[in-house]
Length: 346
Ligand SMILES: [Zn+2]
Ligand SMILES: [Zn+2]
View 1 (cartoon, rainbow, N blue to C red):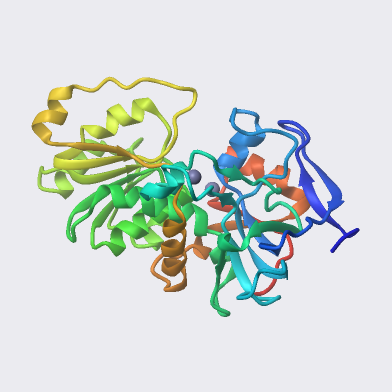
View 2 (cartoon, rainbow, N blue to C red):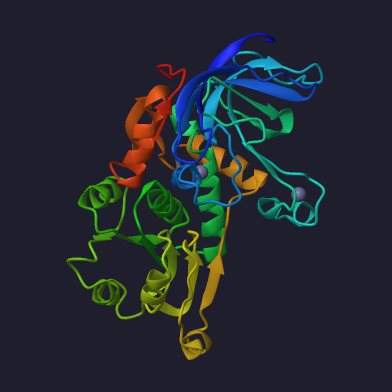
């Protein structure tokens, strides 16, 4: 692959994007080169692109929700064939820090995130241990959701649902729509809340037990009626807002669990009555990113059809329209915006 070039949407600095020809990655002995089919846009990409994430250094190629096919392998890679469908995990954990060794690789102390450049390019390169192999019949568009679904699974694990419980999902972007499906797969009934009608419609199509527009209906009253006055056993808050934390926590039932799923920027404080937590025996949790185990489980839910992800794709744009895609995510247009890099029918 030496001397070859590839297309990449290059971010020289925040808010600067241009289509460039750059050298194709050189492969180390344990590396895998993946020809990118689809890379989905994550709100994180948009925040990083805007320069709002201090951890992100420029220049870089963004894009971490990737699916494609093996294009080449290093000489130590034995169990992958060129052409095989894969989903590369773009976050490389060190594997040896205290977090990695205590089941929390998502909080790895020495991660290399998109070290080699992300998925808004013809190729990505990852170590072979970061490659998840897909079944031949798996849709590459569906598999590009492995990473966000892995984060959702981590958040849902915190909620420890029992069958028959009621979960409130607040915010029905692609993330909320996946929370909803996972909660239902655990046997919970879901109240899905969002002020955008198209999102409520999508939630209904994907099996929400109840949908509520909180601008039109009193959410607290609605939850009371739906649960015979008990409250929500679990809440997944997918909207990054301290006011929303204060607002939704009061809907918890005794023993209720809240997952603060989204980061809150700019930084903020919440005001809570600790007596409510004490007497309500509430459990307030957070979750961030995902582990390699979460990724593997996410992929099996996609491949089993238990979580429908391809149904969340509202727009597919060519690579050079990435900037427009970022704008659409910023304006909450549609659901998931997918970039087709080297797309294919399957
Ligand atoms: Zn993501
Ligand atoms: Zn680590």
